[in-house]
Image (tube, rainbow, N blue to C red):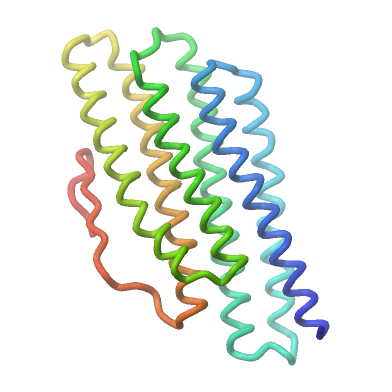
Length: 228
């Protein structure tokens, strides 16, 4: 094994470690919401600093590989993919941190019936997508990455259903408006997490096939309109 290959594997290992921490951040941020656990929310927010540092280290190490004379075109594509993937993982962790931050307000408000369970299911789907996309990354599995990309539609549908649910609560009981608005932003953060997981899947497809899928994935957003 060449020095370049060894260093590349070290970057990949650190990227997977970062992905594991992001999985935990998603799970614990939602658990803190469901259980109204402010201490756990504080842990999620503090762990975000570790994830941020890992992104810096991965980008530094990956950039260092660019100077290797053994880096052929495929190797260069892999290095750029490492940087893109670490950036998306960092953004997912930021959304988990933002979710945890809103708990400090929500614990002071009456709970919205059924909302925590719906948000938990939505976040669980994103967590499973992230786990699968990391497996696809390790295995160079284009089919699995494509499957993850397609599942983002399910997350979008969950978000849209939640948005309609929150609108109904707010119209029926104006006292629920503040809590519903915070819960809506939490759901939106989770939907954005799914978008970043999808971006990772597309990087894997690009790395393995040489192209990013161009088929349209319509995203219907009842707050912001329709986008492609």
